[in-house]
Length: 123
Image 1 (cartoon, rainbow, N blue to C red):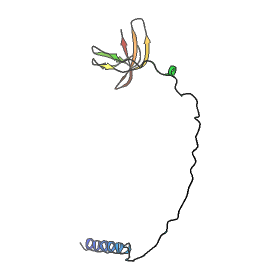
Image 2 (cartoon, rainbow, N blue to C red):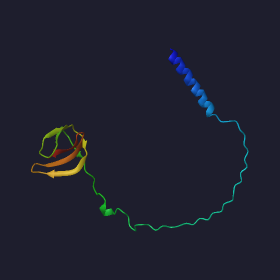
Image 3 (tube, one colour):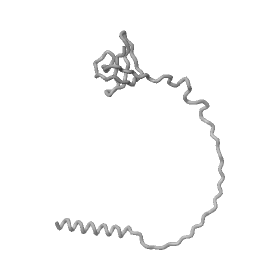
């Protein structure tokens, strides 16, 4: 108990000395300032464009975005075309990456799933 009391007293004494040391002293000062007159001249510089043509031309743009796949029944998806089954998804609209592989039966479409990129076989 004595240690706690002595710590509290010491801490209070340090706090009061700290505030007294950093307190502003009461002083009054008067000052007179004069503002000098400044005259400036401005010149306008016109900078020529670096390129005369636009960076992206009309024929370089993407004409069609990746078409989504509309699933109408529960569909299995695979880690790779003709590979191991990764899982199944319910009927929904799925975004595609644009990668497609054609085989004899149909087409494999790479889609985004919660496991990353996977493949769906579309007939």
